[in-house]
Length: 109
Image (cartoon, rainbow, N blue to C red; front, side, top):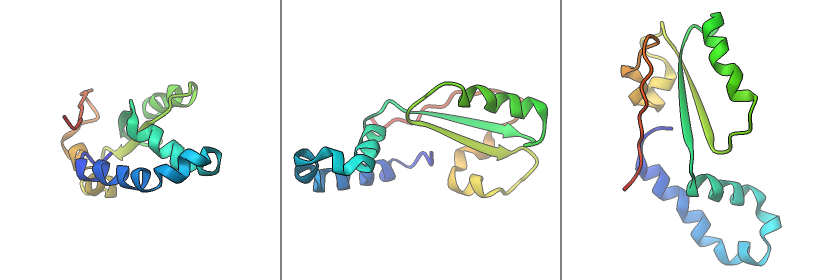
């Protein structure tokens, strides 16, 4: 979500630290197992930019809730705000426009 691969690397550490315990009793660690599933992937990110109340923006959200898509992250960025909080968290959204569709992939090699 942030395009900062350091966070992805740090997210693996708890799984390694607790791997022995989780192996003995995986049902007791459902949230950790979900985090591991997310870390292993595949994952997808969707960035929607627009006016939250506009019909075309609402239409973009609709299909995302109709089908189960595990490991999906949806980011909404208001089109009219020059300095929204989401731009601080996910700086790559700053250069995106509500008039174009761009597919960006950030993957650690």
